[in-house]
Image (cartoon, rainbow, N blue to C red):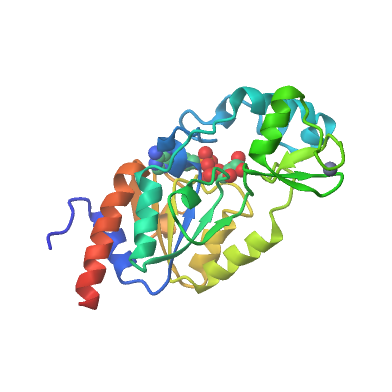
Length: 258
Ligand code: APR
Ligand code: ZN
């Protein structure tokens, strides 16, 4: 089997094929080719908006209506998984990737069929009420929001309904964080895809994997702070790169396992 022309891509495929327990760690960049904007880097949302003004829990508590008006005008519901999401599913089917730890809240890994998705930053499709702790689907609350903003809680009538998306100043869901740490401690390879690796504690997960001796491979459109510690860095679009890696790694795995 001839190696692919990009040595870093070939190296990543080899490391995945030879790994005992591969885990993926993804960020907004993996969903960019599904039409969902990233936060940092070229065209990122936070290059034109102040995240602490539009996406902080302090601001939400002051004026939940601003959050829901923004949602009414900007929410994207038609996004579909792109070839990068499907490549991670293929790597799971090949027994190479065992879990996907994601900072994304778009649900596209689940839509692509990935079986074990750990949502570090919550989900835009689940809504919780701060007054009565009721939980609702986003569809139901979006329907109410179209008639009345901020939407009153179907359970108690309160107006502090919020998607479980983690806002700045909020803690991460403990169960997801603990699960991600367990995966980072037991992986022998972590594949980072589409993250600037600048937001903690999430960005500490690949660092934890490195600290216990795992290999790190990074697929990203721009440089990240962990590039120097990675075994391979493939620069470019995940939707173009990951399918090549998945095909190559599965073929090498098949050759290795015979
Ligand atoms: N393929 C691969 N990488 C891409 C692509 C692409 N098609 N498009 C953009 N990128 C890269 C960018 O170069 C950038 O380095 O994806 C990275 C996305 O970085 P961020 O926008 O910072 O996203 P992320 O790392 O997920 O941010 C973490 O910050 O604002 C919070 O809660 C938010 O979960 C988010 C967290
Ligand atoms: Zn309520």
